[in-house]
Amino acid sequence: MSATSPSSAGGPDAPPLTYDQAGVQYDLIDPLKVAAQRAAAATAVQLQRHGFSEVAASRGESAYVIDVGPFYLASIVECLGSKALVADEMQRLTGRSFYDAIAQDTIAMAVNDLITVGATPLAVQAYWAAGGSDWFSDGQRAQALVQGWQRACEACGVAWGGGETPALAGIVEAGRIDLAASCTGIVSPKQRLSLGDALAAGDAIVLLASSGIHANGLSLARKLVERLPAGYLTPLADGLSYGEGLLAPTLLYSPVTEALAAAGVSVRYSANITGHGWRKLLRHPASFTYRITEVPPVPPVLAFIQQHAGLDDREAYGTLNMGAGFALFVPAAQADQAVQVARAQGVGAWVAGRVEAGDKRLVVEPLGLTFGGEELALR
Image 1: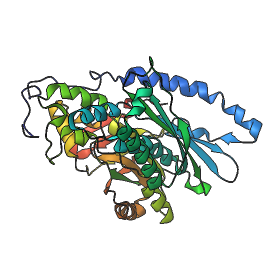
Image 2 (image 1 turned 135 degrees about the horizontal axis):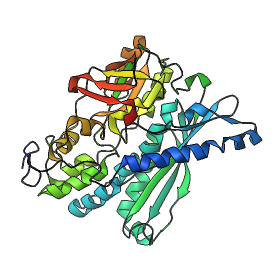
Image 3 (image 1 turned 135 degrees about the vertical axis):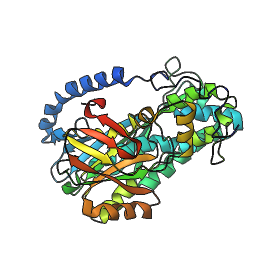
Image 4 (image 1 turned 90 degrees about the vertical axis):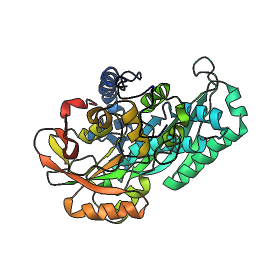
């Protein structure tokens, strides 16, 4: 079966497979996030006991920021999600451990969120919760996780401080592992803080390339396997199998943001394009219109998912990264320089659009798509 020809199980007559059908319903999850944020905000007064204060504008952003005087501290915790299930199945099918890549995915989930506020990552902590002690008996897999974790930390210039490796039989399924990472960073000088205070009409939107699905949308991607006669071994247009395409490790964007700071590029706001897909471009609370005039190429694995799951562009771009893993909002005069800096770090980049005065919405002109501000409720 070719990568561009629908299989008999997932052909053009098959009903679309949405993220809701895969078991992820943001309209149920997001209200809890909002309620938690409101309860958490009431605890900010505790910082005053130590002579510190929170940066209130960081609530609802991808990382929390504390003002400690000469600099800011930023922190975040993130879990990998269900991508490890794909690695487990591919190991069963091929005999190869993909946990080196899975380790990078987990680090990236935390680091790529942390850097959105202008922070330099300093230290990472690991949380590896297995369904039982037996998980660690596979030496090849366990060492791949350790080595991949170390390499990802070195790529980001962060120290691996330690972590927790509980065996949670009865909580985590036997034979499985739940992976998460926390990350602490520093915003120094304070002028690097990028919470969007200076965001203005006329600013440019620079999109950074993704390596594939990253670690978002795996529930949908795994559900799609049920429609593929060859399952994870189904070939893609680039010669990889579907499983290999899904397991391409998430790009680490901190080398880009650090290089931008060193080059003097002013990043006014950032968005890590994970859950909610391109709707994450609407994350800033102010009312602006974000107009996209150039759409990056779609990685083969994401084009495959869109075709075989029967997703229209609205569902695909509102759920998956579709080739854009990170967004930078910079002064228009520095947009080309930002692209050059990113590409020098080995990451594809495009001046993809601009910020305009107007109602809060995202307009993706090449695809004829418009997302309203109400379609991202994270605050």
